[in-house]
Length: 115
Image (cartoon, rainbow, N blue to C red; front, side, top):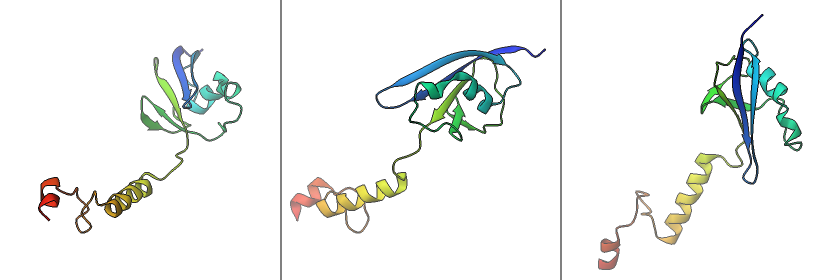
């Protein structure tokens, strides 16, 4: 008989969070622990079949096992590509004169007054 370990399964939306504490067999995979947690009952609109997961903010595979005290975090999909969002902000700053059109750096306030 395998040993039991204590783990947390967490999922959060901007308006609702859920933390479920479980005692599970130490040989269970992350995917099996998530299924056993019943988290999908608290968030029926979410798809937990192939989620991106991590343990203490470190990405792990669904086939990995856990250690006693681990916190399994289920990540939401990104709504925007971070690189594309940053590029959009930089272009907007250039258009508004808050960024140098050549270097992309911040416009020096003193230099701007002199011009």
